[in-house]
Image (cartoon, rainbow, N blue to C red; front, side, top):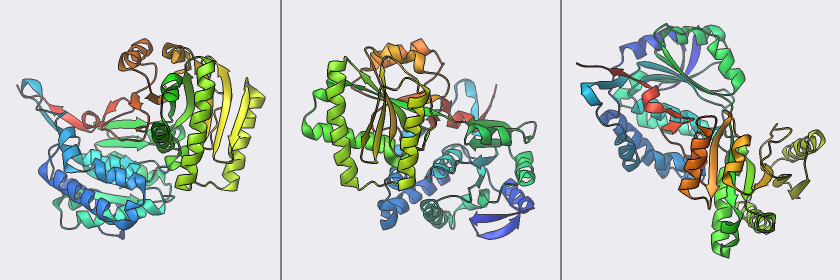
Length: 406
């Protein structure tokens, strides 16, 4: 069985040879100096590349990898109590998603911070940005001791290859939809191996109408920019991109607040020259119409082809048809209190972005839900900001083992 190895050296190779090399590679402890040095070098290369500097998501990755940020992350993981030691899981088999170009790099970096040797399978449907980022990672790996314990590969769907790697790895990480998770979970792991999966998720945004009405023009434009980042980066296809917009406050405040924000969003879309294909615009409107046919939709509001609000009315509401083409389709409802959104929440809900909501109110909601949904509550504009705690998992804990020493 052969695969295409992309990094550290591009070639067609037997899977067995790659796995043997990873087994023989030196091990690192979590947050090892060699790993931190490599990621800092990668940060400099990303932020110094003119073409990547034009891609906001690549710039965000570069900033996330800065030494100061990695040092702050490392402070979360002091030595274990009672004399124990945190060690890497071993060889990690990473299967990142194909719909977000940068995600493979974040997952690989998290695995490296945990000290693992890694084999990362990339989709052959990846975009140009992913290939450009791979080239920069290759430059950073050149001459590094970490190269021996790293393999970026791709191959067409082949359960035999996936099974061969799964049988040899110590950790399998699956980023993908429910169908992907189910298909790969059917492939056995070694009995000792761990598995972490990230299934289909969706996200919401809640905005205080009073807080929006209180903004001056400059602050309103800033809020529109943050909402643009959350919704339209990756064309709304990331699991943390909001699909539902909830207004907090009475209708006589929510309606004018929405008018202001919609106008500000239209200006932001023009400023950034965001465009979508005609086919996507038609599919977006078709999804809105299907929702109207199947359930209680009060109105469909369109701003050119860029922004479609499906108004579900007052009170907490779940879309009657939550199929989603992305690219600026939001299901909208209004509530009088944050606690009212609890019936909308289940385990499929990952992120709640918020504006004008105080921390005590958010904590009260989390206590009410008690694990029934929402793994992240972050300020508006931070939906896509990656963290080592994701989907309720602490990735360093998930990607390591603990050695008890008495």
